[in-house]
Image 1 (cartoon, rainbow, N blue to C red):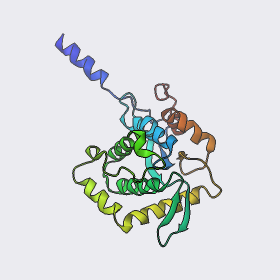
Image 2: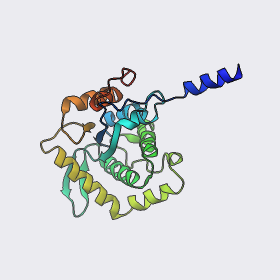
Image 3: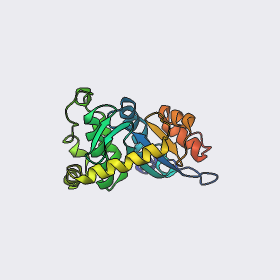
Length: 218
């Protein structure tokens, strides 16, 4: 009897994996802003579950994930780091912090968990009038020793270099504007697919990767 219970428990912990037949993992690029309301909904509620869901192995359907925190920014003087982010100066701070975190957190799941934690802070921290992005929050989500590396990056020209590089990626992908958050599959511009991903990322991911298993998009 004890063996039966053990087997049942093991079966209950098995993560369903996609059949390799006709399945092609896709590259995902997320263009977003640190204070964009839709972005703060999407990352913790759509992107993170794709990496933590124990019912299906969605992670295996993503060959590469690239996060680009920038969005819509008016460049006044790049040399003197004079930028106007869509949701205020605190968003520029947040975009730089996210860029440093993306570079220095060694594990991608930990990166998404950290950003999700920042996204879910009380809204009064993240208003357009806020004087500073909450850079000291969510340290408990980080691997040991990583926060100091993020801060060293954030408080140096390195953060601005990452910010500017993300700006180049964003303006190159959106030469005539667009919307944020934007989920790109295999570096392609497909607005309909991006909207579908915003509404139900896991289902759209399954369809884009060619998974026929109904459990994938359930």
